Length: 230
Image (cartoon, rainbow, N blue to C red):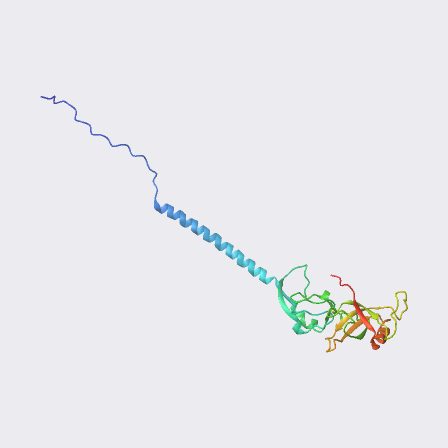
């Protein structure tokens, strides 16, 4: 008969469970919401700054006069030659304000004006802008007596006397006033007629005007264009 004082069997114990950190899904969601809200706030501030910059930049733009199409030197400006452009204020630029358009019409540029450029007072001159302190002589030039299609207002030329029919050309040693070329500036050039003849208006020194007119009347003038400086 087994002893009655035997201890009851001990049941096996389950393995200890490791401690796990306590986390909640709600706190993670709150952190994400705060991050999104902060990012939206930063983007809103940047957008406001960009908008303010755009408004400021637009307010600094000034309407000025620009060139609507090419205008040769010496040609009077018309309202169709001018356009309005808006540019940012820049101390390095000195374009004519758009509200001065009426005072510019009729003036003549001293230099050729190119389409798209800004108009400045330095480009304008009183009168024709070409030789107003000089005499001007119209010279009829036949085909072959000037460079074909290359003469333009502002070009410096030499008006050379050609020999009369049956007359021998003057030699280089002959430095008489009758044979010496006359320095001139091209003021305007007409379109060639059917025979290729053009009329070139030349500005010359007051001492050369009568002589050039005399030679032109005899049809004994050829023009040599001087090199253009860029």
